[in-house]
Picture 1: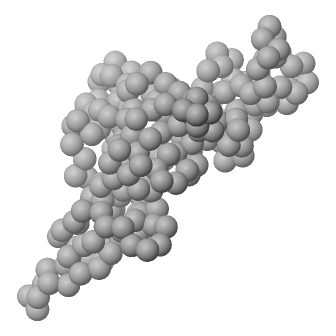
Picture 2: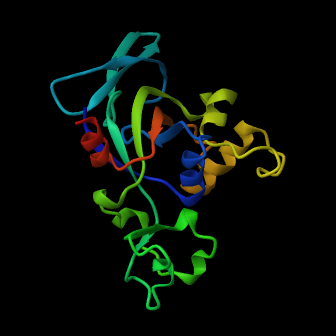
Length: 209
């Protein structure tokens, strides 16, 4: 088991908080070569990464290889999000009336334009409020996503998604995050399923103890 940071946008943070999001897909850093037809189950080598074996079938025979995936089942992902700390803003308007809070989160703020926000990449581990326990890891083509998986990616509903069905909504989301044409490229992605724990990753250990 390893603890790793992971970044999410404001809308996805809200989807994690209200229970709509239990999956996330991330681009595989090393893409299999063209012609790959099978991605098999996860294997665990001696190193820290997991690997998913693949096969490429050609007229000359079957050839294999591996796709490294850093996140494994059982890992804990501590979520990084856009935030502010008490003292970041000149008038400290966010510090009132609850002076016990040291961190505020843009996903919760009704007037985010009033604050000086720190990008999610700069969030410290101690300031994270969400932990994701990884329960499943798959390597697959992006466009193989099912309706159920698209729903689990945090589909906001037909009204909020401008009447787009879940898979079409996810296609737009992927292109918005990764650039125009990213969906059509149909890359290999790592699909992570997780359980959301609304606690700091280190606080979970203290409670368990």
